[in-house]
Image (tube, rainbow, N blue to C red; front, side, top):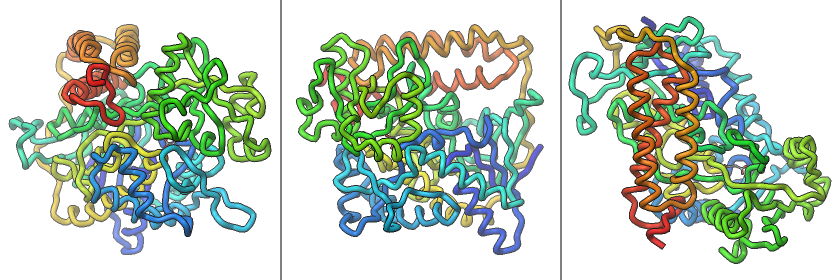
Length: 525
Ligand code: SIN
């Protein structure tokens, strides 16, 4: 049994910046609590790494907090929590200064000012970026910096299976109980195959998104909603799961389902235009802001145009952007497309929407506290209230950085009031002796993805949701049967988590009887 003071699950911007803050704070105090970060893959692999466009903040003298707040509220259809929007927007610049101090680079112009890009729904240029690999650069800087501290242990290939609560002491835990405590996690050591007990005084979930529950996603294969599913199983509160954001422009590759390469919205911010097969700037017909309208509108316009034309994709025309700017701002997109035989300086880029970001998740207050005591959360796995019904582009890295700070402050309050739980049993593996049959797991995973993409995508209906509920219910029953008797593994646990996520998305969508933001049903047109 491993006992730590702070346990962090996840190694993206949220988990790493929280960990770094703890490291810095305790090093200055010459105090050595045990800080442990676990990640199911290698630490570089996270949703953060794939964020291309950048991080939004009020930097330019002509910009203002009011404008950024208003843009966030308009994109979110005004069901955002205004207090949270203010908190994130107003603390953004300070958190970005910290990222810069930790070594993250953002592009500057020749006069030394930061180059600020524009993306859909923003009324001003306010996106700090590092070429078209901003997330990768932030992730690099955070990982390089954290290596300098010896007061944090990073355990890679550790997969968090379940949160430990009073349930494991034989008590009844319900969603309405106010005193549910998190005592740590059971984590599968992927190398030994054993489930280890990690007890912690404070646990932070920073487990990222859920993109993998759909057929085509801009998210890496680790984005299976583990933290949200674990919290839900532990009877924590989860909300707004129906608001799944589809990025309008993922590179379309015939026959490729699964992970799709993102074509950043910043390219539209720089002047690229979406076109249909007749070469028309069709988005203008749906919204006067055209290709730079908020994402929910653009993704729906593309979906509708693809259906009208009977095509699998539309086109992005970046040829109007100055060639030097195109190559220097978007080098990774230029290379990726060039390798596929597309010269983006003159050729049209085939693009289609792909699942990209979840606006809902584990409900947290402004102190990053979940409904379970001693369990904090930040980043994409949370529902802070910032995004409302649709996230404004490049507000996600910002939210993660701001809430990592809030979680850090809260942790300092919690740590002295908390001690390790006693009598926590080791993981019970009774009855699980059958070796995993991978074909059953991978087939169910792709069945689930297909059902979600076909029935719970950009445009929904009551009938499609009912069908999805029935089909995913069957996959749930089969998987629970398998889980009871099979030796535990990451693919099996991920599948269970993904099923929980689909249940929550479908449930949220069935209960929302209106069209708002990212939730759109033909029954409410
Ligand atoms: C993009 O670069 O278009 C994605 C950025 C984001 O999702 O905010």
